[in-house]
Structures are given as structure tokens and as C-alpha cells.
Image 1 (tube, helix red, strand yellow):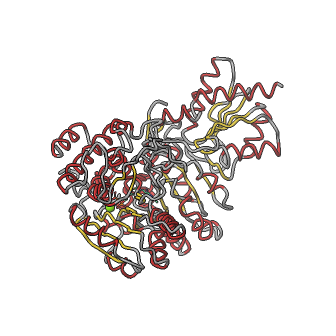
Image 2 (cartoon, each protein chain N blue to C red; image 1 turned 120 degrees about the vertical axis):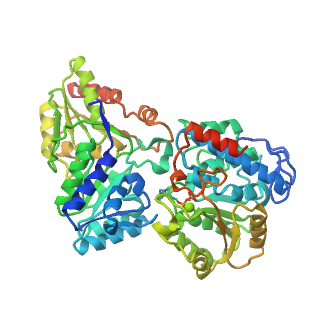
Image 3 (cartoon, chains in turn yellow, brown; image 1 turned 60 degrees about the horizontal axis):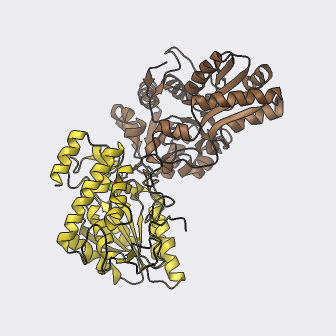
Length: 299
Length: 314
Ligand SMILES: Cc1ncc(C[n+]2csc(CCOP(=O)(O)OP(=O)(O)O)c2C)c(N)n1
Ligand SMILES: [Mg+2]
């Protein structure tokens, strides 16, 4: 295992998620929806601050998936703060590796990384690489950055649970533009063929990729029908509604014999008025004035 | 030489120029048109521009089909995604039949910086140069980038042109004309030769200037046509200066250094030192920090020249 461990302590590990107690800077026991909304807001603030300090990075697609990741890390995933490599942990696989700031922010809020370390994003010798690198950061399952590869990786991870009679579950977060890649559909076909039901794909369906709107660059519709045709159980939710997300993850647990995809309808740049639905902020750094406005809006 | 200009902008502007002259020119991109600057062409000629979305393999297949039907397709993405992401599509559909596809990639090398290793292209030249029939050009500045694009459009066959992300110092005047397959003598010299490509050419010139103050007289060659490599210029450099240093923003294996060493080993064995990335992946960081860490500065070239000269005297 190449992951460096923050905590080598073997004392009673704190389990996180799955409704169990967790210890983190968020300091809640079983977080309420209100708690999680507060966490989501902090994640957004981290994202804006990190990217502006780094001077480069991808705000839009980090902001759109904040609630998805909050629901997962603070309620759905079974994981242990003291042991990021715990073999029984549920896996979160970030396929859209450019949303690395979001993953680092949530790992920090959970306590896997010191919050102060977020300021080192993209700097020389930081553990927080521009795109996720599993050799560098505790809690990062997959090296990513080239799009389209995470679902295949997730299948391999999910199949291992079956081979080892383990009951962990695997969650893979994909971008919608990312679904242009043929490999995503090769993986979609394979997951259904192998009847993998410990796998949930979440698509951050924010409608925008790099060059513009999905519908203008490469139309994905009818998106839900495609997944259905590939043999997946499809759930559609408002990707900023934590209750809908939690409900969807719960429903996915009961789906047997096939994988589940949650199509999360989101807004790219969510939470910052001038970034919302603005393709320019896919990979643009806000100016100092814009940062100020953004942080005020997220106060 | 202090003026910095964008190779990518030169590419976008040249495509528009070519598009006006030749209605058969078509341009493809894979959801990076705003970064590769093919969106200049897209604005002028929307009917001849195809954004294929994030699907590089499909894009290469489409380009091959267009070329087989008589079009002159320019296909662009980041160097890390082509030929890497679509190697077999490039190999079987473009290289093997020798189709007239122009693959122009941007963000080559580690000068992409902070995006990190997934976006740092250090293997692309080895991959593309391994394909028989491909012409490979690595321009040194924006003027040469424009020239490379024009040459590719005017010359039948598969081309790979690798551009970088940052603006780079101009090493050429506006009236420079690229002579395909010929190394460009940037500076004469007799004690050693620095052979460089891409943005390492300006570093090589800087190194040569510094070394001149120590009394070391370096020849500097720009090997912008990496393939077919100018063997005659390499053999002459080896024979006349007796020591060679290669400089590239790529892995040590499979790029310029390997090509030069192959020629000298066979025809004119002399000490050859390589300035390149040594069998490792880099990391996120600023371009200058990365070049320092991975040994790609003018100072590193100078040290390599001293070493090469020492070796020839043994
Ligand atoms: C294989 C590959 N091609 C191109 C890119 C460049 N790129 C980075 S992000 C992006 C757009 C991604 O859009 P989407 O998946 O919708 O992400 P989100 O909107 O969630 O940010 C592109 C084209 C890449 N990272 N990988
Ligand atoms: Mg999107």
C-alpha cells in the first residue's frame, strides 16, 4: 500500500460515516442535515481559498459536487480516520480528478489532512497535487486527471470485495462531460455484465464541460436512458439536495444484481453567483475582488 | 530575445490563415479548443470545425476518415492525451496507411507546471517517434510554430507538432523559414555542441552565452524536426566539436537524446550528455521550480557541457 499514513495509532479507531460516530473538525456525532449544510459551505470556502492561493485549478466542477461529497463522507461511507487504508473501508473514487480541491477539502474536514495544509495546494512538494495522486495523499484512492478512467478502476475495486468476501461498497464520481469518453461506456457495460451491485456511480450532471455546454459540445441525452440501456439502475436527484442524495444512496444499497447510477442534477460553480452556470469558471481562478465577493456569498 | 510570445496563439492564428487559403483544411478538437486555441478557427469556419468532446480515440478515427477522403485534418488536444490516450488509433488508422493527418498538441513537457503529473507530457515524443512515417516537429518559439503548421499543411503525410503552454522567448525573426528535416544553426562554435528542441532552445542559447565568458565556444543547433532527425548535422557537430549535449523537455529515453546518441554511436562516437527528465515523474509546481528540480535550466546545460568536454579529453 503506497498511501502514507497520517496516524499510525492503533488505539480504538474512530469509524466515520454510515451513521456512526466520527471525530473531525466538524465535531458532530451523527450530523444532521443542518450540520451537513454547514460543512458544505465550509467546503466551498476552502475550494475558493485554495484555488485562489494556488493561482490555478478548477472551481466550477469542485463546487458543483460539494453536496454529493458531503453526503458521502459524512453519512454514507464507512471509513476510519485513524486508518485511511482500513481494508474494510468503503471506497470513494474521484474519476474527475480536476475536482481535487473538493476532495482535499473534504478530507481535511474529516480530519485526514490538517486544514492548514489546504493552503499548499499545487505547490512544490505539497501532498496536494494539482490532480489527485494516490501515491501522495492519504485518503486518495485513485490517481486521476485524464478523464474517463475512474469507473473501470471502481469495477476492479468492487470485484475485489466479491473475490475476498468483503462487504465494502464503491462510489465513483464522474463528470458529465467525462461521459464523452468511450471507456466510461465500456465500463458501464462491464459493470452490468459482471452484475456488480456494490458499485454506485454518481454523475455530477452540471451540464457544462470545458469548451461549453454539453448540449453544444457533445450531446449526452437521453442520458438516463443510456445508463438504463446499459443495464444500470438509475436514480435522478437534485444534486444539491442532501436529503435527496442520502435517500438515493440508501435506495442504491437495496439494488441487487446490477450497479446503480445516481444522476445528480447540479449547477456548475454552485454557491458563487458569478460562477454559477458559467463555463468560464471551469478552470479559471477568481481575481482577488471576486474571491472577496465569493467568500461573502459563502459566509 | 526577451519578447515572450505564445506558440498556441500562433497555432490558432495560422490555422485561420490556412483555412482561408485551403477549403480542405478541417480542424478537430477534444473539448480543449479554448486551450489549444483552435477556437480561433472554430469562430471563422464553424462548418469546418468539429469539437469531438472528451473523446480522443474517436477524434483520431474521424481525422483518419477525413484524411482518407481528401481533407486535411488538424486534430488538437493536450500532448498528454495524444498520442498517449489514442495511441492505437494513431498507429493503425493514421501511421500505418500514412494518412495526411496533422496532430498538433499543446501543453507538452513539464512546463504545464501546477496541473501535476497527469497533465505533464514527458512520453509523447517517444511514443510518436516510434511510429514509422510520422514527421515530428518541436518548435522553439511562436514564429517556428507558425512555420511548422504551414509546412505540415503543405506536406503530405502524418505530422506531429508539439507546442508548450507558457509563452516563450522569441528566438527567431518574423522572416524565419523552417526547412523541414534540417537542424538550424543558432550559433556557431567549436568546443562542443548543444542540440536542443522546444523551449530548451532559448535555454541552450543562454547557456552558450554564459559558457563563452568562460572561454568555451559552443555550437547551438535547434533540432526542431525531431524526426526524421538531421543525421548530417549531428555527425558534423560530433566531428567538428567532439562533444554533444542534448536538451529537451521530455524523458531521457526515446526523445532527442536517444535519437542523437543513436546517430553518434553509429557514425561518429563522441561523448554525449543528456539534459532531460531522468526516468521519473515530476510533480505539481511552478515551471521554474520544476526546471530547477529536474535539471532543465541553462545552468544544468552548462554543467553538462563542461562534463562532456572533460570526457572528450580523457
Ligand atoms: C482524457 C482527457 N481529455 C481532456 C481533459 C481536459 N479536461 C479537463 S476537465 C475537462 C472538462 C470536464 O468536464 P466534466 O466532466 O463535465 O467536468 P465538470 O463539469 O464536473 O468539471 C476537460 C476536457 C482531461 N482532463 N482528460
Ligand atoms: Mg460537467
